[in-house]
Each structure stands twice: as C-alpha cells, then as structure tokens.
Length: 332
Image (cartoon, one colour):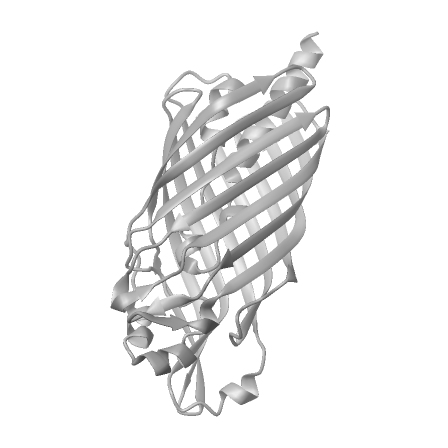
C-alpha cells in the first residue's frame, strides 16, 4: 500500500509540474502572444503533490528559441522601402507563483526577448539584433474540480489576467507609422517588436487525465487584444495543445515522462491606422516530442522540440521552422 501511495504522489507531482512548466502550447502567434506564456495550473495543485504547507512558492525559468525561414529572399532584395524579416526569436521567461490554497494561485511572468532579424533598406540587407524586456503578465488561476485515486487522476482549471505594456515598441512604431499601403507590404507578421504597447487579457482553460501510466494534458488560451503603440492593433489570437504521454518512472526521488505534443495557433490579420494588414494572419499546427524529469519532488526539468506540420502565414515572407524549449522549476 505504501508503494502504491508513493507511485500516486510521484505521478501527481509529475503532472502538476508539467502543467506549471508547459509554456510552449500557450505561446501564441507573435511575440506579443509569447509574452503571455502561462504556466498553470500547477501552482494551485502543488500542495497535493509535494506535501508543502500553504503559501508555497514556485519559481521557474523557461526558454523558447524559434527559427524562421525566408521564402524568397532574392525577390525581397528589390524592395525600395524598409522591411524587417525575423530570423530567430528567443523568449526567456521568468515566473514567480504563489499558492493561496490548493485551488487558488497567483503568478507574474516577466519575459526577456531577443530578436535577430534582417533589415532590408533600399536594396541592401543588414543583419541586426534587438533585446530587452517584453510585456509582463499578471495571472490568477482557479481549480474547481479535482479527482484522485491510486491509479487515476483528473483535474480542470481556468486562468485569466492582464498583460501590461512593459516592452519596448520602437521597431513597431517605426514601421507601423507609415501610411497604410506601405505598412501593409512592410509588416510581415512575425517578430515585429519586443512589446505591443497594448493592455491585453489572456483567458484559458487546462485539463488533465491519467489512467495508470497513460496521461493526457490539454490546454487552450484566447487572448483579447486592444490597440497599442502607433495605432497598431494585434488581432485576438487562439492557441491550443493536446499532449498524450507515458509515465516511465514514478517515485518520490525521481520521475520521468515522455509526451507527444500537438499544438496550434491562429489569428486573423492585424490592423494599423484602422487598415487591415493581410500578411499578418496566421494558422499553424505543430507536433513534437517532450521529455520531463523531476528530482526529489522540488527541481523539475522539461525539454521539447516543435516542428510545423501545417503552416499558413497569409502570404508573409517568413514561415516558422522549429521551436526548441528548455524549462526549469524549483518549489519551496
């Protein structure tokens, strides 16, 4: 019986921290959405999994490195106007979460964004880099339902909050301040800016189920956008994921699991000065493996890779290639 209890505790901890660290399925289409990465509902269930006293803290850091491919660079060299095309994008996010109870928690996310891009200006290409703080988000989570037995486990939780415009909007302001026709051709929908200049509202739901060693984690997030810097309004976006997985090792000392993550992102075109930017619409689907490891019920590590299986970037010059993820969490 004690062995069964240890296995159940180990499985529950694995599930909870996986939910806490799972940033990738909730990364949305553009950097403005990436800043809203939400690691929930793990924080609200930490008490049940680790035996911590109330008011427990969880600190985490996650890294997502995304690469993009330019579809026809020779054609772009003929442009006479300014044009920025993202090459790769790094988002390092620091998270602090506080458990009020086993059902309620609050957290703050602070992203550090580095964007490497090519700048085309009057037939010349220059490689450039921009780095700085992105848009911070403040979130609350609530778990209305949780069910646990030795061989099975299920829970559902919702979250919501606010994203504030702490990130720099210099590059967005520079491009979007042009007249509508120029902006429509120059804005290519990806990696525009460190911050949006807007106050946005991320809302979402997560669900988990386990039977024996087989598990399924699913999530969905919808972000409501407002108008930001330079009269630019990013479109509302939806991101979702489903991650079936297998628990190989369960225990109080260590746990190991593997999952196949299928995720998607979609949004319509953005607007600048009230005019639609057709090349900013996105509808992409990704798939890739994910590995998770926890040590002593306190330190957890997650690694994953996402590959695009279906992409629709609305005619933009850049398309996504890969997303690599690395995440670490410490509970105390």
